[in-house]
Image 1 (cartoon, rainbow, N blue to C red):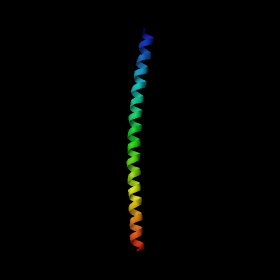
Image 2 (spheres, rainbow, N blue to C red):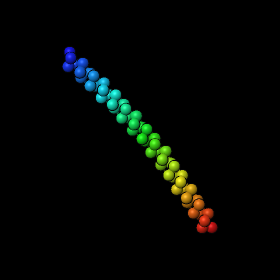
Image 3 (cartoon, rainbow, N blue to C red):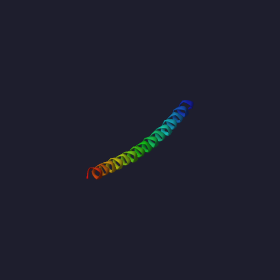
Length: 55
């Protein structure tokens, strides 16, 4: 019975760690997407300014 309890505790801990890792991954993906969008906007703005300077 003690062995079963130990295995169940390990399973709960592994599940908790997995959930935390999934949340971290989700947060990183959102951060990456946001930064990617900011970079695209900056690149677009740079292109627009280059066009204005050339004219």
